[in-house]
Length: 145
Image 1 (cartoon, rainbow, N blue to C red):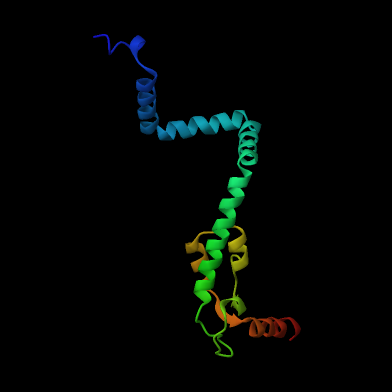
Image 2 (image 1 turned 90 degrees about the vertical axis):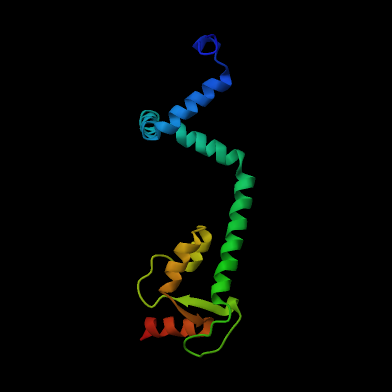
């Protein structure tokens, strides 16, 4: 039959066949990609940098949008929560997260680096909620005691 003859395959049918092969052999494709990157170390970096520079406005817009979403998420965690020292409810802008023990990252770092909400929640679980004044006094006592 003529349709099964490889000489008569269309570009579309070749693409479908190749995609099916790639889907079945993902680990092999990953291996080939890693080998190519080892043999051509500068090319992926150049390509990524060129792509970033071509799309910098879009990326900056997405990053700004995500940071705004994180800010709203963090302010939502602070809303209607009293300070643990003075027991007064402040506006979220006046509330700080105090790490009494070790911390992986600060909450402001999470916002700058656009970390996930799950990672932020894990870090917030380690924190005490304090108003800005009590937080400053807490750290002043630790530094000068």
